[in-house]
Length: 444
Image 1 (tube, rainbow, N blue to C red):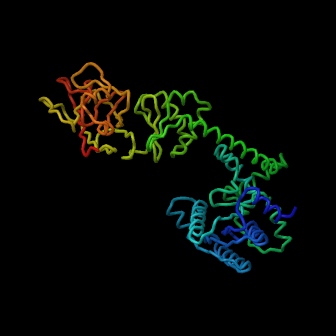
Image 2: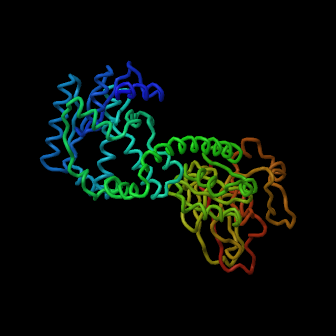
Image 3: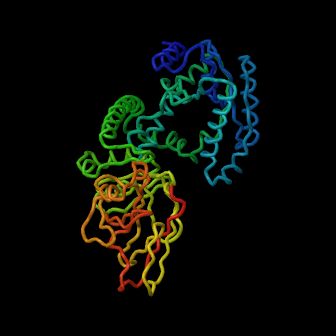
């Protein structure tokens, strides 16, 4: 079965693209991308060619650009070219030249795709690239999503050569007498992929001669395994996650009974910027007191009574905000200014916008959150607890007024119904030495 037939069969079977789609081919000038261009031309696809000159190999980089431009002229298709000062950009961003080149390449490809109206970006990754990727990901510890290999279609990126081995592409190039350019860095072991290609895989082949064929067969099984895994994770998420505005609420008791706990927690938290090493910290929250939290760059997971709450970091849109100490804090209901001062010599004047609490009874962090049914406190001057819903009725609050109520909580105790009443357990007495003053301004 010839390569052109298998190429089109793979495209059709995986629904990668069609004859009516305009395609943008990423062409370096090497064997793989030259073969991709020839297969697309012979198959009658509508395509243009894009080439990045990363200026990393001196005259060779300019030679490659000239070659690819000539390839576009040969096929009578549009050529898109760009030069990058890759080393300078990598230094500025404090990343490796490989990372910089990858980011620059795909960002530019996407820009061309959207501006010029191409449907998909085609890259020349093949089966051997897939084998190398799976091995590298296995040793990196990327989990099941890494060992299922390269996807043939991801968003607007399509890889229609994943069915073919490198040797097949080289044979096709030779049979068709196609010219190409060589990248001497492919023979060096400085980069991780080259090291696996040139050293690791040949070493494994000494003991397991059919390692490549076995890995390709496993990749298919890994993809199917991941599909089952994702389906199971979605079912668990559906049972566990409750979306409330910009927050996710997870019942602690239900989560504790879920198996396998570690994997399910990871799959939940990874969507919010948390890493695998943080899983054990988050599992520890299940047994911690209210107010404890674990943080990523964008979110916090907060233990609040019988719930874990995933909330944006100190966002004024969050339904819960953590107060870690004195200073100014903003939340959706207004702004809080927290100070610690010596206890006054005389009685404190009552004010709806000022809560004065005995500092010995206050322990940070505090939680600022919306009230909810079932909440109770000990109203100032009373030794008997009262549900907030009853308190609101007594105060003749309207429905809209109740919807705007925020409370400040510490260790499952409500210290203040913000703007209304403090809890008797936190009141200032003649024994009070220091006072925590909480000023509420600009209430919602």
